Image: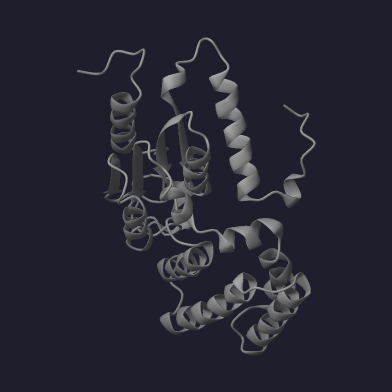
Length: 255
């Protein structure tokens, strides 16, 4: 702790997957750990990372994806922004204009080219978006640097299906029906398709839960801090029972 020589500012999802795999390695070298039942559980971006670790490290015995994406980052962010805006009361006409802007912006990053070409395309799209009053001046100032950051560029291009198709160990996928950050209608079908070759994959949409697995009304991020519930007890029970069934090497299963 505190001795990493890494640079968090330039780190991206694959770096975090390497960190998670280092944790698996640490556990695998402990005598007080059942090496046959080491699992990886991740939430949101962690839900992308967990399958990445399992696909490359055969010591991982099971995976739990909590609100993990199933589609490429550019598609995810477009639908995420649209859903949050609508739930927050933004006019439908503006939301659709913003969606078109976001598609162009992320497409410019995903499209092949040198860094200079990507930067130029992004700057041009942001300039036009400002002229069309789709974005405000303060956002126009910060947006180019945000979408061309190391983390953002990698995540926009990252397709979770690549790792998911390689995962052969048991997988539990849970997503709240009110999750606006990782919409279940977009992501769960893609995850099911990627896991169709896995003989022990369970994909579940839990009703009435938001991105943080809180019981919610709309799922809008503005609700998060006002909901007393930290994590749905029903969701915890579902996850716990599945893990006990799949990782009970040294424990006594619940009746």
